[in-house]
Image (cartoon, rainbow over all chains, first blue to last red):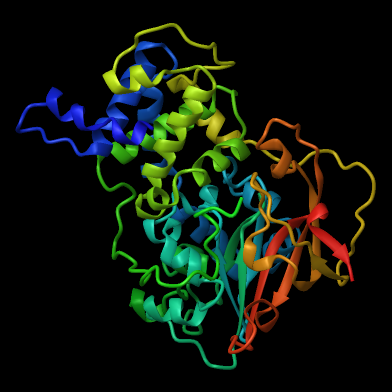
Length: 212
Length: 219
C-alpha cells in the first residue's frame, strides 16, 4: 500500500524546510503529473485563486439578501433555485442543482452530507473543515440540537428541526430569517449580516445591531 | 458499501469544534491538493461516483484519522494508478519514470474559469414517468452492497414520505463501477426522527435524504 512509502521523502529536503508527510506526498504527485504533461501548475494556481477570491459565502449572502428584499426573487428561489441563483451570476461546479430551503418561525433547516462532503460551492465556496469531518457528519442527523449548541445556537424546544442529508447531487442553501431590526437596510447591508454558518443552518443571520 | 464514510448516527467521534475565522486552506499543500484533484478530474477518465467510492474505500482507520484533503489525495493516487496515469514507483520516487495513458483533456490555466463556471450537471433527459409522487408513503429498501451506494445505513428499511420529485439523475451505484449512468428518478424522502432513531429521539426532528427510485418501495 502506498500509505507506507512516504518516509523516504524526508531525505530529499533541507533541514530548514521541513515537509510533513502530506506536503511531501502532494509535492510528489504534482511533480510527477507535471513532468508527464498531465497537469498545468498554472491551472492549479487559477483554481486556488478562484476559491480564495471569487467564489465564497459572499455569493450566497447576496442571494439571501435579495430574497429578503424581493418577494418575486424569493418565490423564484423556491421554485427553481438553480436558475434564480444563476441570474446573479453564480453557477458551476457543485452548484449545478441547487435547492433553497427557507427557515421560518416554526422550522429551522440544517444541511449535512453524512456520506462525504457535498456542499454548495457556487454560493458558499469551499466547505470548512468541520463540515467534512466525522463529528459533524455523524451527529447532525441524530443530535442536531447538540451540534447547534456547539455553535452557540440554542433554539426553542418547540422549533422543528429539519436536517437535509445531501445524499444525491442536489445542493442545499439555507435561507435564514431576516433579522427583525433591519428595516430600511440596503441589500448590501443585509448581505453583510448573512454568515456562512447561517446558510448551512449552524447559525442565524446576525442582528442589525452588528452594523450599527 | 458499509464503509467508514457512512457516518450518520455514529457516536464517540468528538465535538464539532468549529474554528473561528477559519482560513480556506490550512497550509500550502491543501491548495495544491485541491488543484491537483480538480485538474485530474478534468482528464475524463473517471466519474465523480468512482472518485467518491475510491475515498470511501480507504482503510477505515486511515479514513477516520485523515483530513479531507488527505482523503482526496490518497483516493486520487488510487484512481491515477487504476487508470494508468502513474505508477507506485513514480509516486515513491517523485518523478516521471514511464509513459502513461492519454487523458481526454488536460486542464490549462485559461480553461479554469470556464470549466468551474460550467460544472458537470448529473441530470439527464427523463425517460418514463416517476413511480412515486409527492405525499406518497414509502419504505426504503434494506440492502448492504459491498459496492458504492448513496443510501446511508441509518436510512435503510425506514418508513418515510416523498416530499418532492427532484429530477432524473445518473445512478451512482452503477456509475461508480463503470456499469453505465443508468439514470433514475430522484426523490426527497423525509423521515420522522423517531422512525430513524427510535426511543429517545428528538420529537421535533425530521431528516430527509435524496433517494434514487430503486432505493424505494411503495407501502
